[in-house]
Structures are given as C-alpha cells and as structure tokens.
Length: 284
Figure: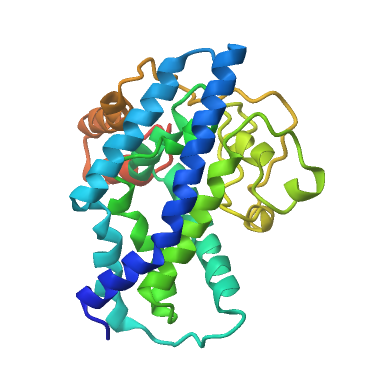
C-alpha cells in the first residue's frame, strides 16, 4: 500500500498536465469577455465578475488545504481494494469511462438530494451562460465528491489514476458552457455538447434535472434523463438569486435549508428535508 507521501507525489505529477489546459481555458474566457464587451453582448457584467471572484477564492481555499480532501479520503479507502487493474491500451479509456459513469450519479445526486443541492446550486444560480460560468463552482464540493469515486479505488484503480480520470471528465466540460456554439446534430446524441449542457442549466420545467452526463450522454439515455434542446433556455434557478455577492451565492441555499430544518418538528421530517429533492414539501 502506498503511503500518504507517495500518493501526494503521484497526485502532483498526475495533475501537471491539467494546469496547462486550465490556463488555456482561462485565456479563452478572457477572449470571450473581450468579444462580448466589443459587441455589448452581455446583459450584466456583475455575474461574470462574481464567477471570477468565486473561482479565485476557491483556488485560495484549495491551496489552503481543502483540495487535499480528495487525496486524503481516497487514501483511507485504498486498503480495501479488492481487485487490480492491469496496465494496457484499455486502461485509460476504461478509467475515464468508469469516472464518467460515477460522475453521472454524483451529479444526479447533487440535484436530487437537498443538502447536496445546497452546494451544487452555486453553479446553476447565474442567469447568464458563458465560458466564465464554468468557474462558478461551490467552495465546498471537495467535502463530499470524493466519496463517489470510492468504487474506482475498490476495483483497483490507483488514487492518482482515479483523480486524473475524474478531473478529465470535469475539465472536458469547460468548453460546453457557451451559447456561441449551436447544435451539433450527431455529437449531441452521444456527447455532452453546448446544446445538451444549455438544457442542463435551464430552469424551464421540461429542462429541470436533465442531462447529467459529464462527457457521454449514454448514461442519460440509459436512465431516462436525456432531453434535447428544443425551446429557448431560461438560465438560472427557479427562485432567482438577486445577488452577485460570492458569499451569498455560496451560502444562500444553506440558509434556506437551515430555516426548513427549524420548521420540521420531527427527526424523520428533518431527515427528509436534508435528503429529499429540492422543493419537496415535508410539512411542519
């Protein structure tokens, strides 16, 4: 079994290449901002600046140690591995496919379990949709998302390989946060594309809780959550957030959740408030 120090070294090495992709995408965001500024194409720049603020604070928290939760959590699970994945030409495709499958269920849980939605809602709260929306990620996702990767460790993928596969799925999704790319007829059927992801960010009744996939739309088709883009998308959440303050954006749903917990009079109703879907009426 690898030590924490060995896992940390592997973790750093595995993510070196993601840094270059990340910087490239940040450059793309800046180019899009310049393009939209020249064309006066954005309704409100306060949402863009909120996205950047959330991103920069999040980077600071990761450097302060929050990002190591993934590494520490998976390291604690690694002694319980029951298989060993052989190296070979299919290793990385299989790792990414497995990570994409687990991402689907993690993402679906983040929409259907109230306490997880309180974290994930940050990403959906913007009424605008552009490349900078990809930066609008909760500061607290690292606290629980690693749990969904445990099956990869159990079935023999190393910690570094698991994290690379998972963040490959996450990094892929940067480019799909845009309205500047229309429908891609063949690709839309099988891959997560800008069109499919616009649906996912829609608050239109028929678009809510659709298209959870990270890279592939296969999972949505298999489990009945796929929806093509037919109508104009209304972005944001059903109860619009009237603030661009990054702290309000990250905390508003926790405040609402706490209020609902206080209203729930029994332990069972408190549990249902935490674990039921957003908007579920659990009664007093």
